[in-house]
Figure 1 (cartoon, one colour):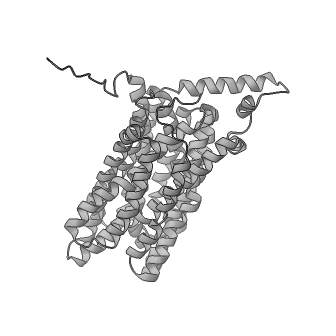
Figure 2 (cartoon, helix red, strand yellow; figure 1 turned 180 degrees about the vertical axis):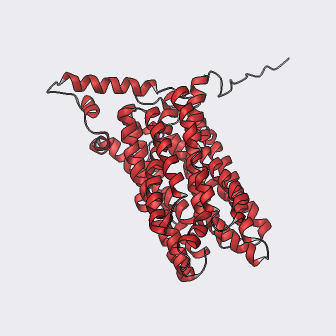
Figure 3 (cartoon, helix red, strand yellow; figure 1 turned 135 degrees about the horizontal axis):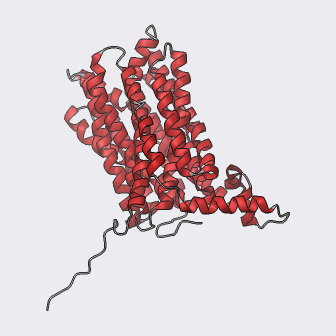
Amino acid sequence: MKSESIERPSWRAGVTRRQWRSLFAANLGWLFDGFETYALILTVGSVLATLEPDASQPSVAFLSGATIAVTLLGWGIGGIVGGVVADYFGRRRTLLLAIVLYAAFTGLTALSWDLTSFLVLRFLTGLALGSEWGTGASLVAEIWPSHARAKAAGLMQCGLGLGFFIASACWYFIGSTGPEAWRMMFLIGVLPAFFALWLRRSVPESEQWEAAAARRRSLRRSRRETLTREENSYIRLTLRQIFADPELRRRTVLGSLMSLTTTLAWWGISTWIPAYVGGVADKSGADATVWASTAGMIYNLGGIAGYICFGFIADRWGRRPATMVYFAASLILTPVLFLWTHDLRLVVVVLVINGFFTLGQYTWMPVWLPELYPTHLRATGAAFVFNAARFVAFLGPLLAGAIISALGGYGVAATTIGLIYILGLIVAPFTPETRGTELAS
């Protein structure tokens, strides 16, 4: 007797060109952010050598952390404001504005004449950077069908890793051209301005947002004295509403604690990977600059795989189990890399695995957060959770820099800050599971 197998349709079945365009736009926006972010991480040493040449080695570690912290602070403020703007004025329009401002301030960064001007421009760039993620994540979640939403979120998020990889590759070739090669890295950041022209013509607005915006306008025009609790949620300021509603407040607090875990750990630990690997290479007699760039590319290849795989794992196991697995693996792999891996060949292997989990875990946010909020509050809620953590996470680079300066090594600093993953493991079980649910309207 001949057995017949039932073929399951591909998750891509039924996905339209309109949906692919929205994903491509969000992915590119995040790719540009990734390039800009990792360009700073790779070049901060060269920047300080040019703009603050008399700084001592301990001061360089502290100023490096401070430079990253200023960018994070701007990112946090811009991200929250951008989420609110996206809920009132639209996903596409906000994404377009953020990309144009980002390109402008990044290009101006290349012209910095002293450390103060550099820090001011980094803060302004951070404001624009922060506005892109919540807008893009909401756009993709609302336009893509529920059976493919998590996979699309992973593909969107991998843009960050692609940007990191491209920045590492650019620095590999540009870094050795001279002491002010860092200026060229920031000039490259002007290119996204050309992408804005395509975005304006080709990317659709979310129909869910348009319906929510129409209802908000209708309720405001009605000027009724008595509104239901649900109608009030449209009238009240979005940032206030995510805390006024008890259930949304609970979700926002839980999400923010998990976001703090991911964000503080990454900025306090992983930003030091190029410097750490460069130090290992130098002790082995290899070229530290080349290995620092190579480490960034290897680490981000693992991260790209981790971003994409998370969406598939979250659809198979659920949002909560997938996130907890990534947190647990990151907790273990941090001391493995920074304390116990000193052979360059082994570093390559550990970097890939570490990147898969420590970078890849960011995908829990575009997968899970849009499913926790209704449409008229989605960008605000997701952007607040994603970005508010930076108001605390910016201390990570400062703390790590202080520990490194005091103890003279990366291992203890990374392992100490890595304990934050325990917080994520504690909080995740209390966050609502949303696998298989439709987005709230």
